[in-house]
Length: 408
Image (cartoon, rainbow, N blue to C red):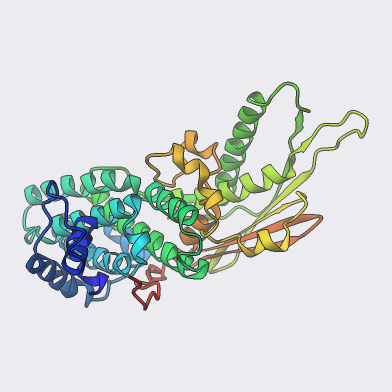
């Protein structure tokens, strides 16, 4: 029997019991019947068979600038019908995971959260009044808050499975799954937060960004974090010499999700700063290394380059740069319960959570941008960021992570 007929560990327990009577479902768990399995997945199939309808940044900004009651209700009903479709594609991908990974408590928790959101949102009737929209916004905000645990839960689940079952899933397959999951998560949060903005529940998520101001803000924050780590350093160890940052280029203003661009630049600067920091040596007259940050633009894109002299990366480190497969990089996630992946989480930014670079690339690619990193082992690394400035590209929401096979 396929995992496509299961909806959680409790449902998986029922399925296993039907195949192996010697392992009955514990009495304390009220597992659904096979009829419910069939019903829930038949309902899921209805939504899974539909493709998401992507939007452009410009469309979202237009709605925000020209909002009225008619557009507000149209937005509510679009979100009401679109979110279950996007969630259904995620649920189906979770059902295709290897059995052991899919029954990990952390992965199962994420899976259950998706099912709960799917069931609640799909049952919302057509919204025809502002009062109904207010109740819908309450539901959306509850889902946003509940899903703050998803990134840490996914990381912890992968961490545990990799330690206990080495090679349970190929690194390439895991990376595709994680990228698709995070990309889908971003898309749902953007739609949800945008509708909350239209409903006067929160401030706009779109801002006129200055590339110079973004860099300045991120530089100050990186330096503040480095100073904090210096204060925590063991006095018996050599003092650390922090790098100098040289900023050059032409400032550009563009409308974007400031949370996304700030997160990307901060992560790249933080990595460059960490590698270019060196122990002080009085005999060698240690000279601070330099990080050069260059910004420019053309008619279509805003461009950033961050160049450090931190020694570059080995072939193996460079090979796994964007991968989620090395569970050791997620070690600090054990200390994190919730993560929004935004720059305002200062307490979490101090820790190396292992997801900064992959998450930055997902953010960049969401609206059609990209990140490229070139390294010269023994000298340093250059990171290039390109972000579209016109807002005319659709959301990059690949619904499948091509996990064709189901492993029991």
